Length: 194
Image 1 (cartoon, rainbow, N blue to C red):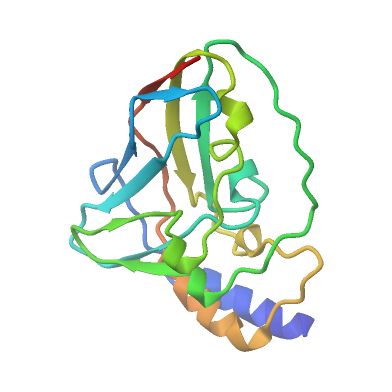
Image 2 (tube, rainbow, N blue to C red; image 1 turned 135 degrees about the vertical axis):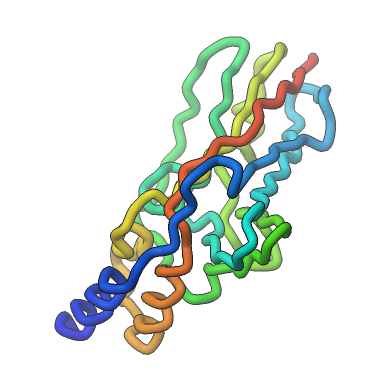
């Protein structure tokens, strides 16, 4: 099995990579369903990554561990709070394995939602936790997305799961079609009131 994985990884790195060289090729827009919320309400944040190229690309949705940057793609929100605080949460170290279903074709001039529920992508714990928004005041929020690793093992995520070798060749091919990018959305402001 180790030999098989080595061959797949060799294939992944021996073919020219799709690269996107400037910020005009992809853009990211963050919106919220409202601008004012009450303490205890959780803002509904929507992310759209636009393919401004003339080529079809593949992007990977938010996976288990993406929100805490344990694996690529990194998909997370940064939240500038009116009063800095820390929210303690416990997580296990296990992460689901990368599968071909995690790769989404994004055609030219179309957009991609890394949290699309139709694909069973994982949400961002910070943005979905009412404790994040427990203090009245103005919150400034940005979304961050990165596929900036050439190493497929940085995306696999499995710690206790075994890799399904029947998918390994397909994963390697799809991985080559994912551009190496690091983008940040616009910043939005929301207000939390008592």
